[in-house]
Length: 262
Image 1 (cartoon, rainbow, N blue to C red):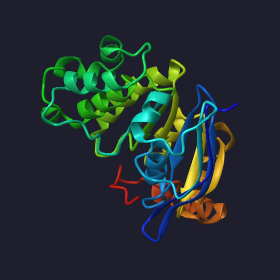
Image 2 (cartoon, rainbow, N blue to C red):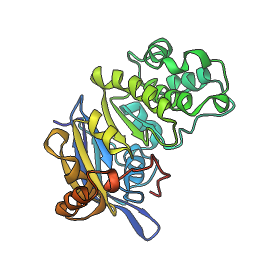
Image 3 (spheres, rainbow, N blue to C red):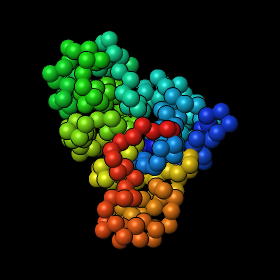
């Protein structure tokens, strides 16, 4: 049985269904990448799974337990942790204090202050700095480390590389790779399609709140994903590549991460 099962989930902003009848499943040890254009519904979907946004319909089951109606802190205790978009650290607390706060609320397990610092060397030298004084890469590493302090069965990461300099993205992904290599179960929202495809075992593409493509990452081409991303026929993408000399004119993220509208 899959570790995380979402069935027919709908979540709304007022009268707008930002997530429409979405179903997905994630097996233990898998990394599922959620991709899609700004406003596709990725962030709302992740927040609904985590309990930070109410679900209007559908169900969320974690390791056989229906958590659909549980509040956020109860979902954390069941083994679900979210790294939110924008990181949301406590700015006036030190990095160490941010980690310790999460450790008090979560489950017991292998992730402690020492193991988190070992996995995320970016934060080793800033443990005693206020979070607000850290760089974007350090803050993102701290935010992921904070979630790991809860010892989650499933880690949800929203916009991993958003707003980070390329060198910081490389450093953060290097640390995250250790999680993935260690068998962690991850659902990842990522604007950078190439990065998303490089680390995921499955990929789900959203468009206007619904799922338009779901497959094993190894079974789909970049052109297929790009076509689904924009909601255009695949031959349109191939044709554009041919006329552009395979330039990244149709890249869903041609100039780096952008601020998502979902």
